[in-house]
Structure formats: C-alpha cells, structure tokens
Image (cartoon, rainbow, N blue to C red; front, side):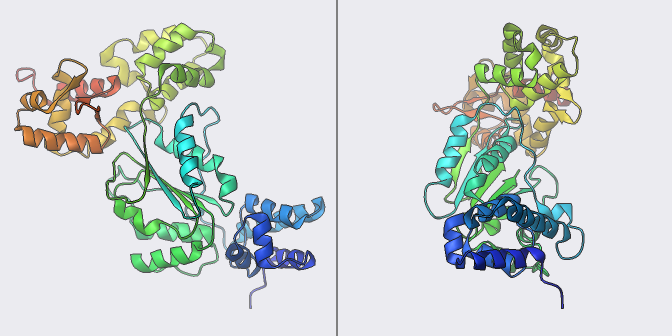
Length: 417
C-alpha cells in the first residue's frame, strides 16, 4: 500500500485544526471543494503554487506553516506518481513576453468574457500570420491567473503542420497535467472527453489551445465548470459555437513604435527612425520583434541603419529573419495549405493596382470564373492571408503583398505576367 502524500496529510490536518469544512475552505479560498477533496485524498499530489497560496491565506497560516505547505506541494509535483514528470504532460504556459505591448482592448474583451457569468467561457483569437495571437492568449491567461486558481495550461495544436495531434492526444496531456496521479486515459475520444469533464468539474482552470487546425480538435477538450478556454487559430473556425471572437489587426504606428522602444530601450530616442521601421514592418508584431532583436544584437546600428537595410522591397522579407524567427516562414506555413486555385489567386493579387480589389478584377487576374475566385477568396480569408473591409473588398498588408510578389516571381514565368 502506497504512503499518503505529505501534502494531503498536511492540508487535511490544517483544515481540521481551523475547524473548517471543505465547503467553508472552498468559499474562503476560491478553490473548489472538489479540488480540495482531490488534494486531501492524494489524487492531486502537487497543486500549483498559486492554489496553495490561496489555501494558506484562507487558513490564516503563519509563515513557517505556509512555507511547509508550499514545500510539500512542490515535492508532490516533483514526485507525481513516483516517476519523474514528463515535460509534455505538464502543459505549462509559455513564458509571457516581458515587453508585451498594446492589445489592451483585446485583453479587456477577454477578461469581460471570462467574467460574464458562472459558466465557462471560450474565446477564439484569429488573425493573419505574425500578428501575435499566441502572445495575446498567454498574456491574457497570465493576467487572469487569480480568477483561475486551479491552474493554467497550454497545448500546441500544431494546426499549420501536416499531422496535428488528435483531440484524444490533447485530452491525454491535459488530464495528466490536471490530475498527475491518473492511472490511464481512455483511447476512445468520447471516453477521454468524459473523463476530462469529470476531472475538471468544479475546477477553475484556464486552458490555451494554440494554433488550432479545426473545430474537431477543440470541442472534446472543452472542460466542465467555470473554466476559460483561449483558442488561437489562423482559421475562422465558424463551427465553434458560443465562442467570443477576437480578430487581430496590425498594430497602429504609435503602438508599434512603443513595442520597438521596449525591445531596444537604448534606441527609444530615435523616434523618426523607429517610426519608419514600424511602417516597413507593416505593424506586424512578429516583424517588429525581429527588427527589434536585430537592432538589439547590433549595438553599433541606429534605427536608420536598419531602415536602410530593409528599404529595398525585394530584400525586405529576407531581412526580417533572425534566429528561428522569420516572417517569410510564418506566411509560407499558411500559403502551403491553400489549394492550387487559392495559391494562384494569392500570387496574382500582387498584380492588382490599388490598395483593395473586388472579385471581378481579381477573377480577370486569376484567369478564372468569378464564382471560383470568390471561393478562393474564402480560402485566403480563412487562413488570414487577406482582409475584407466593410465594403466587401479585399486587401493585403504590405508584407503579405511582398510575399505574394515573391511567390509570383518564383512560380510564374515572366511572359504571362
């Protein structure tokens, strides 16, 4: 017979000494009675530090008792079921950006959705490649951590990869993350989803499902109870019912300049150069971060020096790459998912004069019937490769247009062009 975890024993004894029932401790701490019961029974061996702190506050623990309880929880997280925890099963949030800038309206919208009522909330964040969907979701989950004391979890759904994980694989990771002592997770998707709902019943957790490929990856993973699910995707996912929707746009110039100044504070006084650099990056956060990192790694460069290197349109996308970050690679991962008709339309949008276009002119450029062109625009919209204005016309931001030009030159002969 296995020995009861030290954390379980300590928590139960402390609650008993305080003369509190499970329900009373739950009301004081904001941690669900079900979660506290799991801790005291040794099912949840190592709750997160924020949850333990809430319990310690509710129990009115003195510093030595508080420290001992936190130590016991930490030991439980390390031991788990007697074997080292697998990093892939812990599902921690990525480190949030220390210089995260802007998106206050979007963060407030997520917070409002999360606090709208006792039921759980689902928020979908969509937008073109490179607009910072993941960073926004992680920032929101971190800011709302106090409202979800039973844990914050993150799973990469790899929606732009050839073989994204199934819902069953995602459920296995999350169930083991929330309840490390679980013996096994059913291989059937429906049975695993039922276990997930049972595990999360009464809990307040925040789950980030990043880069979703389709609604089928998400629906079975929605937890029970008053939890928050933040989904990011390049796709619109119209079949995801009852979800709040946030569509990201490029950052305004003033916010983009602030982001650059946060990355390279020693260049913050070079306002004119940073403003020009922000324009060359089209307000795309990924491009801005790459440009900022390039400046930070070159102490001898001014903002104007980098502007000069990025000024030539045919070299700009190649210049917006550093380390494992690349604007071109981000665009390419969406472009590869288009049908051949969709790719041809995207490439040939580079030939359309003016900032916006409608279906008739685009159909002429793409050499296809208007109905086929309209369907192809639907593909581009779904993958965030074009924007559609209130007037129904379509547009590309400057970096996507440069990518379209590059693909046109690479794939189509000069004569037809």
